[in-house]
Length: 287
Image (cartoon, rainbow, N blue to C red; front, side):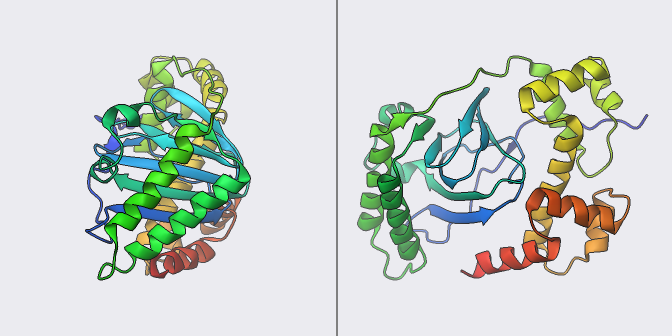
């Protein structure tokens, strides 16, 4: 049995190359059937806001799952570990806003930030306002020579004020079994190769059948589905950063039996072919 890799620490993205140094903000629109991000990660000084226009799934913040759906927002504060579990094959339309805490601290104290609900339901008219503010901010960020920092701060404050007064969402029960958390880490650390369930079960001191049952119950998908989801998410990352890599090479690197299997699974989880995904990623970078 080949050794099972484990993560010594949660993957962290501590530094982002902001497009505009005057406004350490990032805003991104995604409209896809993609499986979405899968790694469990944390930021030390960045606030993340996810505005779900269309879609559904579950979002893990800390050790608690929050169900998301049309017209809701998820707020991830600094140093909160988080992970997204979009519902497979469902159309997702999401606005992601990331901002340095130092920018938000100009108009919101740390105590006020701590009271920000992790999940809120937003009315359609207010979601339209939020999207408009996001587009204004994004326009300012793209033109650093004329950026008005006060305008950006005002619109960002308006967005957070809407979140503060909106209705809290309903939470689910927290994940209690740390062995499932460890199993997820092992799967993610070994996602570029086939990993038998027996190996994962042995690493977390559970029987394969009990692990499979608990994993499906808590994560809402089977171990095999989660393994495929992680491999496709890794494929998406590589397609976004490497414009020259051949699909056959990528398929081999991720341990698929053949190119047709890779293409089939990619379209199943991402809702489009790898070539279409690469073209979409290229357009996103230039827009």
